[in-house]
Image 1 (cartoon, rainbow, N blue to C red):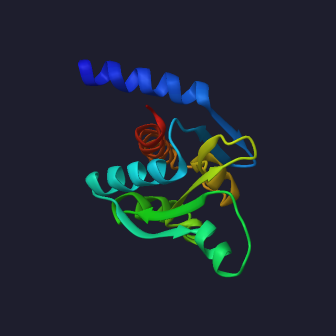
Image 2 (cartoon, rainbow, N blue to C red):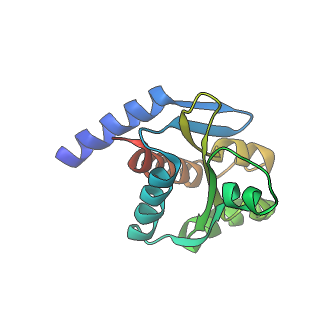
Image 3 (cartoon, one colour):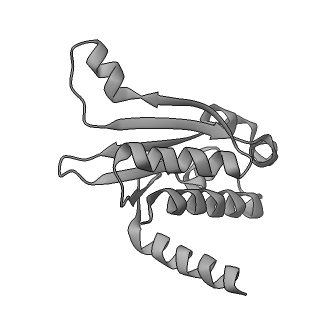
Amino acid sequence: MRHLLFTLIGIIIFASLACADNGIVSIKSSHDVKITADRLENNLKAKGMTVFIRINHTKGAQKVGKTLRPTEVIIFGNPKVGTPLMQCGQSVAIDLPQKALIWEDEAGQVWLSYNDPKYLAKRHGIKDCVDVIKKIETALGNFANAATMP
């Protein structure tokens, strides 16, 4: 019961802080980019997800003499989640594994952004996998909340 209450509270907070634009969900973080990315990576691994790579675009920019506000991408997935989605529409594989962008905007606000599963379903013409999409949507929301909340 207690777990359900916390889940509901998290969903309400998530819904109030998330904004979707062009298929991207962005959630404000209470932490800097590194801490947000660390929290996300640790939570993903703790939940059995595979973290394939963590890319620090800021360091990449520095290597070529450019500046870039803190920007990291984490690429992750799990065949238990991704395979059912690909069975619904195989072309969605081009958008898998999942990616999370952790970035700082011009005002210094840190965001965690990811592809909206409903957008991916629309993009790939997936119509009959509501439960799969909902499961992925919930999982991504939970991961994002765990990384961004105080």
